[in-house]
Amino acid sequence: MSILPLLVMRVFSTFRQAVLVGGSRLRAAAERLFGRRPQDLMKRQVLRVAMDRRFPRWRQWKQLPRVLAPWESRLLQSALLASVLSCLALVGGYVLTHREAVPAVGGSYTEGVIGTPQFLNPLYASSSDVDSDLVRLVYTGLFRWDPVQGVVPDLAESFAVSEDQKTYTVTLREGARWHDGMPVTAADALFTLQSIQNPAYRSPLVVSFRGVEVTQADERTLQFVLQEPFAPFLSTLTVGILPAHVWQDVPAKNILLTSRNLEPVGSGPYRFDKFTVDKKGNIRSYVLARNADFYRDPPMIEHLTFKFYSDAQTLFGALANRQVEGVSFVPSYLVGELKKQHAVRLLHPDMPLTVALFFNQDRQPLLKDIRVRNAFALSLDKQALVDGALGGKGRTVDAPILPGSVGAHPDVAKIAYDSVAANALLDETDFKREEGTVIRSKTRVEKKDGQDVAIRDELVLSLTTIDQDAFIRAAELLAEQVATAGIRLDVQVVSADALYEEVVKPRSYDILLTGTQLGLDPDPYPFWHSSQIRDPGLNLALYANREVDTLLEEARALADPVARAEKYRAFQDKLAEDVPAVFLYQAKYAYAVPTKLHNVSVERIYIPADRFATISSWYVKMNYVMK
Image (cartoon, rainbow, N blue to C red; front, side, top):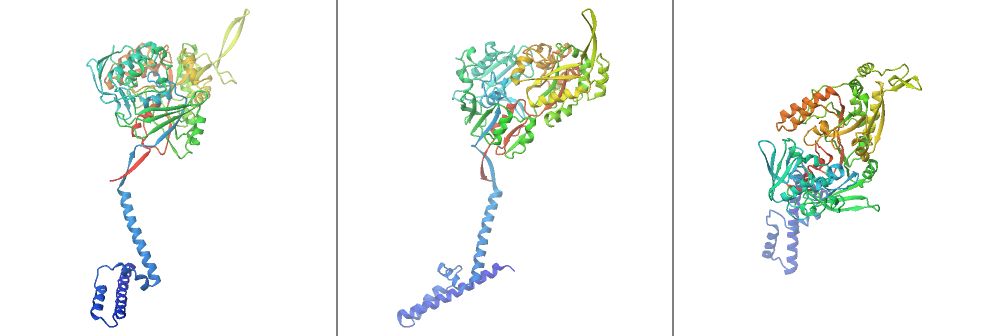
């Protein structure tokens, strides 16, 4: 039986005793006052005290301690405390189950980056990941890449394409403003695109707008006329737009020298706030502030701070010491170390970066023999490369167009790892394995001082790659693998700064191990059309095939994705037949953010800056409201 009913009965019994005690005291007081028994007065007073009430008066409750036993007082106090706590628990439970956390404006995020900013200018930012990251936040383009919908209007409100697919009419939205308050107009977009086309500006984007005529129809409308249909054209219009009123007075020859490259005025979700430099003039940090007037949903994080470091080890030391909260890129060899830090989480979005070996047959005659190229490919264990160089964070590939893109070809002919077949192919050549040797060689005879001299030539090839841990490790593994077929691979490592000028531009390599990255549209033309063999083209295999040229030209002119995919698959079949390169793996991108940062994940990116594609929905602060 519950004690509470008994306790209530005891309280009311005690209250009744208190009433009687109070009544006898009143009678005694009346006798002392009048010296007699004032029956009427006493009766009235007693009735006033003893009258039936639904709830006792405070002076009556005060009598309880005098009539309750000590154990009863403690029990009553415990019961009252339990009742109060129960009420609080009921109220608290209701609040907890009926409140909702909603994102709120405020907070900050500090990210560590390898490298330093140079040109926060859309005309030049594509040459640097650091510049691209900041430009993505400060500037916006006519179109933008959305992780779900693909290429969608941004500064553009709408667009129309002519029936012949050569004329694009783009109308700008109203209400977009630069960070200095001036309105964004079609004149700004016209200035930007004509600057890209102007050779005096030396923008690396010039190839994307070659042969495109740009005119302004009115304050909000632009017209683009192409010489030939080009299906990926809208993806080129994602380039950030410059404010003409800020840049038009800067001569083209001085554009790389002006401080406006580091103190930009854009139209993006964040605006330039400040930067700091060290004693040597190096930029150490860069701060962006929330643009509350952003024409789309303004971001919620108040400040973004970027801190710059020379290498990954220094950057990760700063992360361990909490000088930064996240990092823009995590090399594969540091993934294990990062997992030990509980304040951050690692993200692995897909990125269309294909790592491949490109054979330069013009520089190395040995590679003209398709048996040598095929044997090289057969001796490679691609999965071992992914495991050893990337820690398993990647997937093997057999063609330049990756799964999920227009033209992906899962049935393309594959060269599977087969060391026996590789050796059998090389046995057909002049390069033989002599007893007691690992590397194949051939003997040729030359005249020297009138005498025939036998000269032994080993099967030696040179491989050049970039000075990055994953590429160096992959090159070392490749050298071990091809040695089983009797090929010696000499690895040459070149710094990232020197790779383009010293290696790629002059095509100074036998075999190049590097990554190629398709854009928002998987157009392989820049990497495989014969017109792109020489710089500034990116045909790194120096591959020339008229049939392939025709397929690529026809594919990029088709708006129908099904028809384009058919052309792309035929192109990849031809590559598999000719083996101008060996496609190895697709590396996953990795970056780290603090656990305090919410709603960050992006499943697929095209360049590292795409990790900011959903920046407006990121948040640190939260408010709680009742449902």
